[in-house]
Length: 231
Image (cartoon, rainbow, N blue to C red; front, side):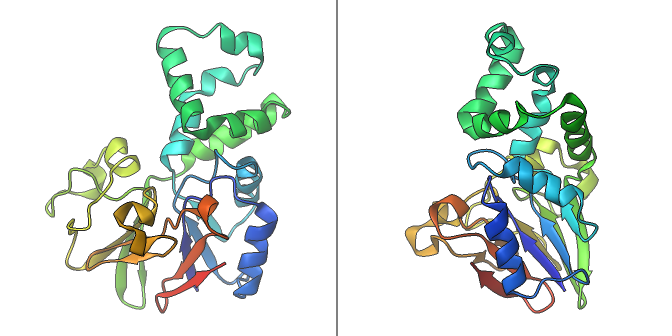
């Protein structure tokens, strides 16, 4: 079975493992996490380290992981003094990350060895921006935020990182006729209170970001039968 979730944002790793156990997730199944496992909550780095050890799980890069990578200049030595010395473009990049919840991740990294941090950074650098999968004859594109600047004749390889990490499709947005795009990034409550805490399914796309920090837990979508599981 193939499962998809997104935007865990530092959610409790223990609770997430309990969730997977409750639906019978095993070594014979596969999990795609569509980015943004870090920031805001306390367990983002723990989730990353867990994913790095899971042969049957794949992280798709999210904009929060991209912001962390953009701040790799911080990680030689994370101290109040080193942060205070930031100027210009580096200060702007750092401030953007922190204002989007990056402090929780920085706090977790501050107690780690440089070699451990570099190992995590290498994992993120190798994380794909999207994956395509076929399950029971149905084709899916798995990506963090949807497809910005979308055209039906545009190859996936032609989309920029910004298109794939920061776009926010509207309810009226339609993608391909023969492939379903699955993404997170925008909590479904953004589309209306009636969608709050629920996976949002439209004609051509599915949003699995249920706003994990504002409800009991995340959601999982099983692609084999399109069944949705809530914690």
